[in-house]
Length: 346
Image (cartoon, rainbow, N blue to C red; front, side, top):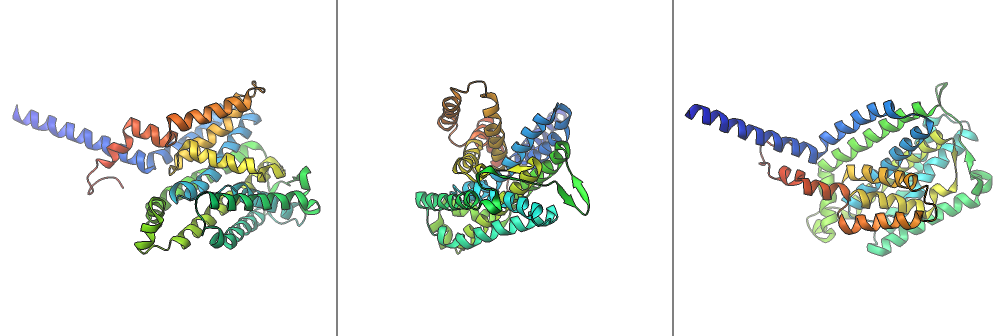
């Protein structure tokens, strides 16, 4: 009997440990990354036609931008209302360099990402000296400047009418078809999620969290807060530019609307609704903000009103965002933090 009770106790303890390990894996993102890969692999089985492929690709690319922006907003505790400008830099770089100068698509993508990173690097130091609504206004101004340049330089960008984007070519291979682009977008999303998760586990990621909690305390502890903010701003801009380049080639046409203020606000809203400082929250926020207009398409007169009600309700009842709030309520994070420091899943 004593042996039986001992074995039962060990079994129960083992079950609790396994449950905590699973909860820790969920909280750390490993299980979520695996689920994302499996979901991306199986999703084409239920996509009936090109329209659904297009919607899913838009979700994936918006999620990529939102994940990069979440590094700056959610983890670093800053704000940017001009990220659509970096998205447009990547898109227009690919459009112009491939259509007018006949460069390979991958070269145009790299140049667009480098151009966005360079712009972000140049403006990072003066802009990131600001904070709060001053920083928001500065980044908003940057986005507006990029949008004005795209609209005014008609000879180069096509102006308000937009510009056609040639098919993506690499070493004579021509990439076309929404199904093929789906796999490119899915791979880009998985890589971006993996990058975000691993970055936040690094010493730099822990520094970003400290910066978000208190910039003064982080500086007192010896962290280069200005340099950290500049680096994460540049990284988020490069991610947005890469997504913009892929978007331009996948859609085959780009307009200045992608650089507009409302597009930047949409990216920020994706981060806030899904959950700040949550990589998978950014993915969920991108899915909701992309799908919601499709569901409300039949209510054209009430579209903006219903859209606003849904967003305001989310902010009131789920102030931390969807993923962090639901995670806390389901006990994932509590179970993960209950793990002992040694022997737990990192």
